[in-house]
Image 1 (tube, rainbow over the protein chains, first blue to last red):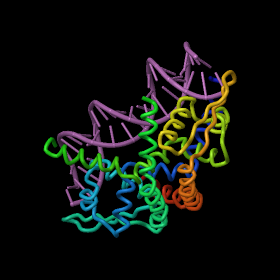
Image 2 (image 1 turned 90 degrees about the horizontal axis):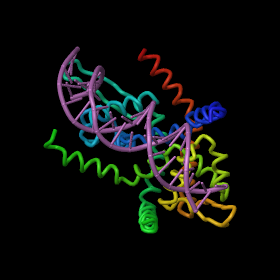
Image 3 (image 1 turned 30 degrees about the vertical axis):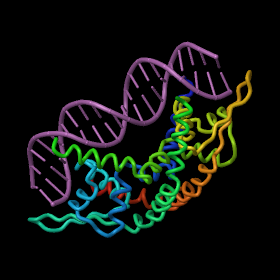
Image 4 (image 1 turned 45 degrees about the vertical axis):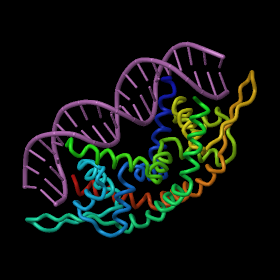
Length: 127
Length: 127
DNA sequence: CAGCATCCAGTTGGATACTG
DNA sequence: CAGTATCCAACTGGATGCTG
């Protein structure tokens, strides 16, 4: 399909650039919802987050936080020289995203049973 | 870290089971937002979707549709014997998700510039 | 037309070990 | 305590060819 590579590439680019998709991608990152949820309760130290989001490896925790920081959703502040103390908190931009997260959560909790039922039915029909 | 495998595994399971995360995962699937968007305009044939979501490979289109169908968000109906005709449409459950998608879209379009600005600033500071 | 199967490259994310 | 660096297994998603 060499003749259509350009078209395909253009489409892929435009999809990647789609704001909705980009936001969804970020929100869907495995640990983002948990971290954002923690931070919505106020600033948290790195260690606190590590404990609260215990499933995440150290690498993923930092990596995810960096990503959120890069996108301006989370702010990082450092203090202390000996006993280092790093704190993360939501930015105004991050806070503005919370209602959207909440909307997702509300829908999810309200309809997850229907989804599960649909899955069972589907899987049963297939097998 | 063999001693904590159980704990870790339990956490990972609970995260995977988290309704919010599951929904976010589905919504974040690369082609879901585009497909759902198409279907919100009414039923579409497979071919129509293939054209509208031209970036997706045939495999991914079908795979994504199956996933949505499995989760009860989309319904598939077949008709015709010779010239096969397969149509997809949103279920009631799928329609109930659209406002959430819209909320994400609205936030995204409204704030993507801030995100981009934050990124540029972050990247500039790092380098 | 709609869909399935296979192969495979690129990415993701976890384990582990080490630094200031 | 917070973070970095490396290695690597698993998963994702695209290309291609075939079927009813």
